[in-house]
Length: 422
Image (cartoon, rainbow, N blue to C red; front, side, top):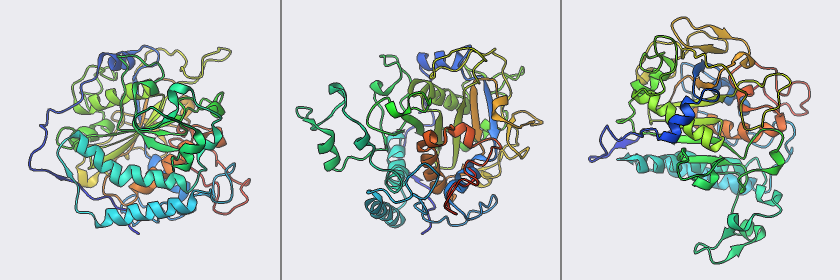
């Protein structure tokens, strides 16, 4: 079943091209922070192919988009550390996912007229499919929670009756899932907290998952952001991997107060990253899509730092990725400059052999993928799985995706389908 996503159509009456998100003061504080701010950009031309290989045995063709297999292909067979049998939700998840894909295939093209309608499109074509795909691979994590604080419990819609975890599960509530965010999901909630993405991947119904403590893998790992293509044009998003002079200054420093639409998008996403602790962001304008991965510098030797805080680093900034600007029809090729890993931006990209060499705080940016690329949905399913599997690998998404890494499950797998090199 092809999983190509339809190109939305702009409605006759829409918001204006000036309907953009201006970073809040708290966002700018996070962006400009000397130690943990958005100081550097790198690009990686391996991110999409590694995602594809995480659940697919078929070749990943860079220059052509072949129909992808059903995203639930081998969903529960890998990697090591997960049950070798389907979860109890597998059959139900299959039905839901098949219905989502069939319904979407027969829908009329989606109409977009503002940011809310753009979010509606992602819910119908992305979030509903990802939620169903998660049911194919993972048991309901509600069962792993002993209890919830009273102020975080499930309740009747009028909030007058508290529901037990057993009752919530009996009614069909399932985690992990992609959900919306409130201020109380933030690491340090306050009235000025920045960071309200369209959706976030929640591993369980609690803000902090006690099973993940000490592993530095949080309960909220992926943030999703969608923009209208008339306000955030594709040329603005392609500038993220082109070293644009309104994003990077003459001293190779990221420009934190730039009004370039691509820079504003990065600033907004960084505020979300810092506020929610989600180190991975998926972003699209319905023409191209990117994966953004936060780089937290390695901890200095012999220095104890809280797991949620990156180590202090000197503010020496680097230029973001190389590549000539290309149109939307060439989105899959943009950003592919020096092949072979993560590289700094600028005219002559220089390969970085190991992500541990990235000593600055910033984003690793994927090459752009076209929204209509039939591999996109499958790659996002794989990204969701990889984020969920971090504690099993004891490796972060950053360690598994951009660099040349060791095979995550080479000879240790007892299943030929298991443990592919991510």
